[in-house]
Amino acid sequence: MCGIFGLVGAIPEVDAKACLNTLGHRGPDGWGLWAGEGITLGHRRLSILDLSENGKQPMSDASGRYHITFNGEIYNFLEIRRELEALGHRSRTDSDTEVILAAFFQWGEACQSRFNGMWAFAIWDSQRKALFLSRDRFGKKPLFHAQTRLGFAFASEMKALMPLLDRVEANAALIRNPGRIFTYESTAECLIRGISRFPAGHCGWVRDGKLSGRRWWCTLDHLVDVPERYEEQVEQFRGLFLDACRLRMRSDVPIGTALSGGLDSSATISATAHLAKHHLAERSSAGWQHAFVASFPGTPLDEARYAQLVCRNIGVDPVILAIDPSAAISSLHRYYYLFEELYITSPIPFMQIYAEVKRNGVSVTLDGHGADELFAGYFTDFVVALRDAGLNPRLASNVLDAYFDSQFQDNSQFPMRRKALPFWLRWKLKDIAKRVLGYRSRPVSRDAAHPAFHRLDNLGKTLYTSTHDTILPTLLRNYDRYSMANGVEIRMPFMDHRLVSLAFSLPWTSKLRNGYSKAIVRDAMAPYMPSEIAYRKTKIGFNSPVVDWMRGPLRTFISDTVASRALRESSLVDVPAIEKAVGQVLNTEHPTFNEGQAAWMAISPFFWESAFLNGGGARE
Figure (cartoon, rainbow, N blue to C red):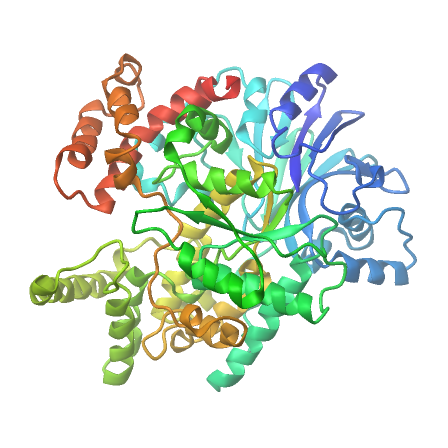
């Protein structure tokens, strides 16, 4: 896990190093530059596997023909290395980087399909004078590129390319459109004009300074056969999930989990504990017993007690961090500089928890991201399944039970007074009808024309779009930035491509079942965790309590920002809209969570502009 940079063309070493060092947070353990005829490759290293100098990058193969800079991890590198050694290859290092080079030598572009991992890498073929670029199936690792005055350049983050642009200019149309917050990550469009995003699941060659690419992975081409009996499906899921965790435990440094107390992260750390107890993980770190819990005392978002229950069950003492927004005010510009992007909420809790991970000597976490999008964790998606239930009252009742139970809980962010329930139910049933009837107005997947897409049920189509086009690509990007800003690598067992293929091969009734969301995850992992967690229906989510913060510890900061001359001179924000949205939070008696998010979204382009576009965060 690292930061990469490269340029096809000629660049002075001092300039290449300057670009590379903007990625120093991604790779605090070392750096390297390699230059050949018409090419420069750069690397910032976060040491995870083969901590010796043998693992240093850029790396060249034994023949001297291929040279690589690589960001990510290939979890099944041991299995691939054994296969390559049987074909006559000899290993000089104990790293997955060398395995990529040998696999590319042996199988060419087809090597990508053999990798179970997350990556963005560039391989220079010195014989053909061409550069090969590849990005993992789901875009867990970032890759940007630009045509610059010096040639074709690529990097892990936009900030490494900006010094090479003739003009650094914001993509104002995109920034001013909050409706695209969850859609632009799956496109080539970026917040900086002149920089493009290399697509997930694609590869390509750069020849004579020109990039030509192709898509090498589409989940719909890799659907699998599943048993008809639900109980057998549960066994299939359990086996794959445990194996995904086993592979992701491979590390030469301590590993941990960012634990929320919800189902997904609890399943992940519980599986890790089971595998460690039974010595089932080859080349795994002995130091896995690290759980990091973000706590929001006094707010509806605090899940610390659930996380503690999980930790007691597996015999781990958690590190509980009370998130302090006041302490983060002086760091907010730095956070936005490192984050680079725009999102619906504050980066404060995410940055703070991964900073705490690093302070405790842990550089790798196994986290639970992806389960909600794959297995139906968002109640707003449940109503789509009513179209699948049709006129079957039992199935429809299961969907509605899951929908309503997810909202009527004692610790919900949106508590309802009992006397308001009858009116609310009438209104909500109308809302459900609108959602079902308006299904076709939802975002359309880029794969909507694929024959297999039409064979998915309605819930499957919705989840596929969330996974590949909207919500999940955005979250994968976010967590890459939150963690790598602190020199921490996140591994995601739910995002194992075998599990993703399984998820879209399952019927909707394996995801919404008996009134529960993510049913197959619950039933498969219940033997390894407390039943109170496995079958807990509340879903809070790891988020910022923006209303509590804006009305409390951040009130003066937000008020001063809204009144500042700098904000009023910004070309990227709508000042009257900000005043209205912030005023709704600060000056009304009971502002909602959604109103808090809307206020933060309105003002965040100003933070981004001053911190990232104008470089204020780079100097802090």
